[in-house]
Image: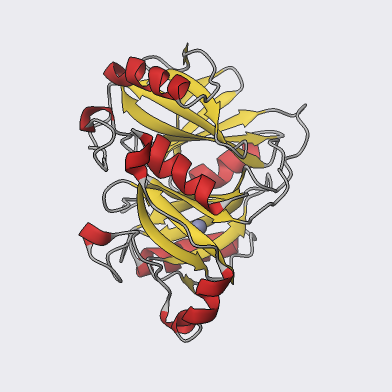
Length: 317
Ligand code: ZN
């Protein structure tokens, strides 16, 4: 049977400042800005997409930057950590790089076998990790300021905290084509495809407070479905599970449905295509502000509302 879900598509988080966000993700981490657009549901706010060269599913971290927004709080019912995959041979390079940019991090720790994990946060407190491993075959993107061999390959896993893991696990395995592939202590790892970029860790943390939305927190996680037909089929399964999905929404680079999983995290299912080259060429991804057709008539007003930003990763050698 063909899978309706193949893995992670993207993670979307909330930031407090647009320029700071660009500097951190393209400059310090070296991700490619694959799209600079606005929030389709609130076009006065940017929507930045960072990823690999073309923004493959499993590499895309996106942000809504609200200038001056108060911090949220990590906690249960929330995706608290997004991790990036790197070769094991890149660890020294990255530890030195984090130090150089004055980013506090926790010492490397083995999680599952063959995974050395380093936790740190962005300027808004968003939970991030570098996972050094030897099983990622993807190539990374570089603007040239980070050696290609040390470029981030995409996501490794995400970490969701829950009161209990069972109901979310049920949804992942029964409706979303995931299976349990590893567990350790209170951590249960699921994947639709057993490869870096697709691991979803559910961590049972009944004693933590509930997460609180704000800057430095994740808004939702999107899973990847091959096409419009598989998305419809999946949507019906979510309806049958009584999770009340939205209608299919056109996000220009993919179409989406949204629903809240039983533990409280907002889930999205997005189509793998058409992708980020629908409105600008691969060589120029992320350079100009792209607006979907419905907002093009308001371009002048939108450009006035969002603060101008600069993409200059080379300043972060
Ligand atoms: Zn999304």
